[in-house]
Length: 174
Image (cartoon, rainbow, N blue to C red; front, side, top):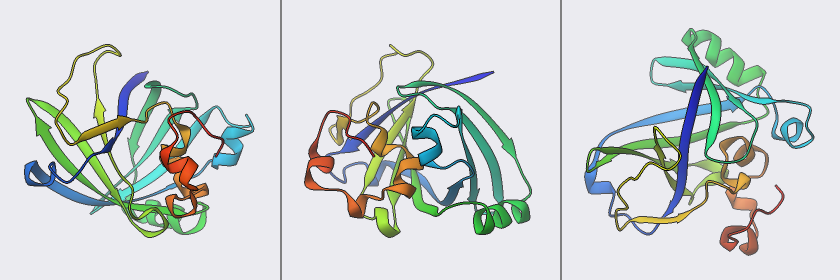
């Protein structure tokens, strides 16, 4: 079983842009809805993702926090396109920028569509308490806020958030 340890942050500015070594456009949708997860009908999120000529399924345990079980499997691009078009409630689009700081990779996601204006950085770690660099552009941590999970951004996009949701540091229902 794979374990993902990931922390997510808002950004304080665009200082990361000059350090990006590559970027890729990603489209993803969920085969299990955010509502099913919230209502306890599902024990995992199941995502189909396409980037360029690659596609894969990703399964993550449905739990809050920075540590979750994760499995990932490549799928044929045509299958992914079909799943995105017919089996998902919506498709989230973003550009992922890869930024390395002091040997640590940050993935900066810049969202489009109804999530335009939202930019977050994620860092994957080997241990929950692992130290990592804190560049000046790294802002408030939102790892514990479910509204920032991609599955919830499809169901309740950033464009529909209230000011309280955009500024709150405590979990609000999605």
